[in-house]
Image (tube, rainbow, N blue to C red; front, side, top):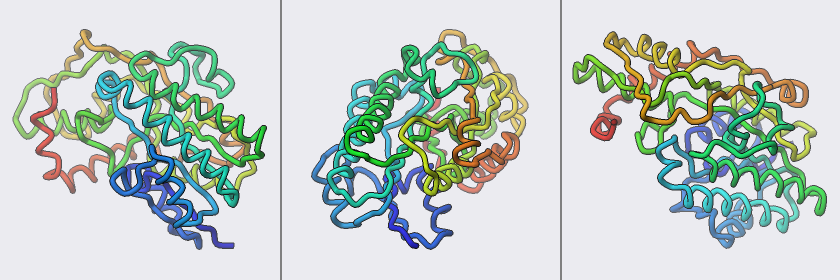
Length: 319
């Protein structure tokens, strides 16, 4: 039976992939655009959205996000807006009373800075997040507990997914907000265009990260709609990690940059390691990531090359 699915942040990076994936089904998919149309930090906008669209399912992707620099410069904004959007949506959907399921997509930043690798869902409360993105991570952790509390008190049905760092076409290449993969691609493309002999990378390069291709994450979200899960978090990732140093050299090669790459130890690495235990997603969602990193990076860089002129204006803002 066809469902009406509202996707907050539906015109964003992950939202485009999710809406594209769901549009292949018989469901009616409504992609909410940004704050100018639906300010989810205001309860009345959330109530109006539910009244207008009458969804059976809400997938909450909208978030105030960014890399280390953006998190460091906007801790209050990141905490407030992510808390406000999530709290308003959950409470309004609870009062709306007709929702079959609420799917929240959280963040790997919610995990403690120091925890056993691979990260297991049961460890998410066992410590404080990495300092540079703690406000964002803590906001999402509070929403995890809110969903658990709402199931206990109201029988509110939800699924809570914790994806690892994502990348792919339509990623955000704005240096103020970009994450590591688009930031590195932009650095190398600038160096090639300007004929620079050296590219500087922030940090030691020793930290490791796990990366999930955006279409794979969209597949996990689609699978979650038909799953019988509760609000306890479910990791979504590949289960493998790579050092930032090796990632940097891999992207340099794929971009065609043959100059020197140097690492500036005066900048923070962020969390030392990130790699998820994905056994729960395999068991509950029958999900396994299919896109390997080399293939995913090629698709991302090919998309960048097709849209390169859009990003020339960012070159002056790269440090």
